[in-house]
Image: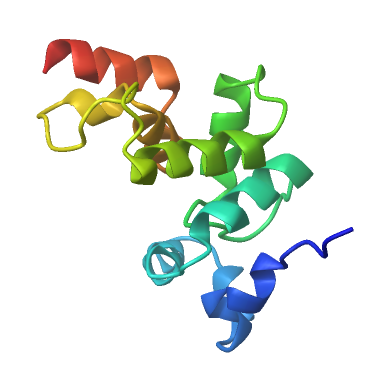
Length: 133
């Protein structure tokens, strides 16, 4: 059996002070920006959502944003599968997905769903944005 890759080894916060990701108020904005440059942001966010992590900024989302997202998408069984699958389809240029370069189209694509999750926007909100574009 192949050993599963541990995304934490590639996390940006692994070498920096991870305590800075467990902050409140305006400091959360800085923590979210720090996460945006992390190569494993999707895996981190999926872990926090799948495991119900209550505190800190994970994958660029605050605990409040993650709670709102979980409430808006109770149908998701595996955030890891959803988010990594959406990312893979987007970067593979899946012909069933919309082009990210078409104005307004990305909100409805798999990548758009992943992006919506990262921004704590429900899928239906992303679809409404697409329809109004």
